[in-house]
Image (cartoon, rainbow, N blue to C red; front, top):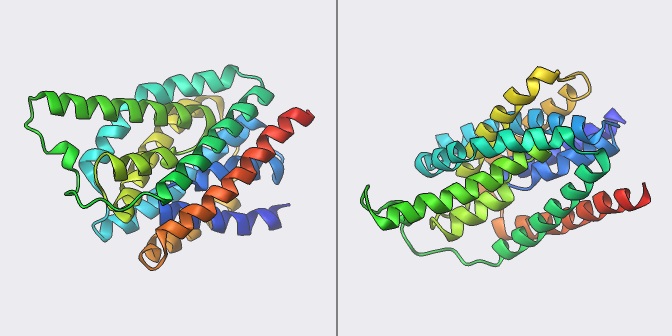
Length: 260
C-alpha cells in the first residue's frame, strides 16, 4: 500500500504548499485507509507530515515576501494552550469518536473553502486590522479575534493533527485583508508552529516514524513544488476542487464510523 501512499503524499504536499490549507485534512484518511494506522496514531503521523510540509512551503513563501509574520505569530502563540488541551482530549477518545469528529471538521472545512473561493479580493490595505494604536479598543478587539481563531486552530491541531489552514486562510483574507497568496504563506507559519507544539506534547508517548517517513518525504517535495509555483495557479479553482475533494473525505470518515 506504500506505493499508493507516495503519490498521494506528493498531492497532499502540493496542496499545502500552494494553498496553505486543506492538505493536512487528507493526511489522516491516507494514514488510516492506506497505511492502516489507528486514528490516534494517524493524527500523530499527520502532525509529522504537516509540520514538515508546512515549514517547507512557508520557507518558499517567505523568500517571496508572502508571509505576514505579525499576524501569523500572534494567532499561533494565542492558540498554544488549546493545542495542549486538544492533544489530551484526543488521547482519551475512542477511535470511532475521534474519526466521527474528524469527519465533521472536514465537512466544515469543505464548506468554508468553497465559501472562501467565492470571496472577492479585498481592496483594503494588507493587515488593516493590525493598524490601530497599541493601546486601544480596536487593538483589543483585533487580538480577541486572533485569540478565537488561534484557539480553534490549536484545538484542531491537538485533536486531529490538522493544521487548520481552512480556517486561517479565510480569516486572513476576510478579517486582515490579505491577498490569497499572502494568506497562504502566513497560514503555513501558523500551521508549522502549531504542529511542532503538539508533536512536542505527544512525543512523550513515542512516535513510530517508520510507516510515515517515506510518505512525509514525498509530501515535502510536493510542498516545495506547490509553494514554488503557486503564483501560476488559480487560487479560486484550486479551492473549489479542494472543497469537492474534502466533501468526499468527510463522507468517507463518517461512513467508516457508521459501518463500524
